[in-house]
Image 1 (tube, rainbow, N blue to C red):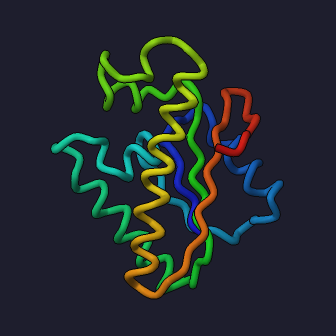
Image 2 (spheres, rainbow, N blue to C red):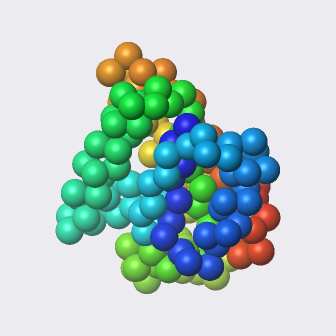
Length: 142
C-alpha cells in the first residue's frame, strides 16, 4: 500500500495510529506532501507542477518494488497548505466545515481518478481510499 499524507506535524502520531489500527504496521510506503492530494496534483499552481511528477514517480516505484494494490489518501482539517495553495478565493476559506469537506473531496477524487488512470495505463490496477482526519486524529471516509 502507498500512503499519501500532508506534512502537518500536528498529526504524525495520529496517522501512524490510524495505519496501525488498520492492520498495516510496516506494510506501506509513505509519501508526504504539503496538502496531501492537492500537493500531489501540483498544488494547482505552475510553481509546484514538479510535485505531481514526483508523486507519480513515487507511485511507480512503490508499484514496481512492493507491488502495491492500494493507495490511501489521508487529508486533514485546518490544512495550511490548502489555504496557501487555494488563496483567499478558494472554497476552503469561508470557515464552513461543510465547504472544507467539499474541498477535500474534490481534490481527493481528482487525484484518485489520476491514480486509477495511471494504473490502467501501466497495467497496475489500484484501489484508492480517501480519508479526512480531524485535529484529534478521528478519521472519516471521504
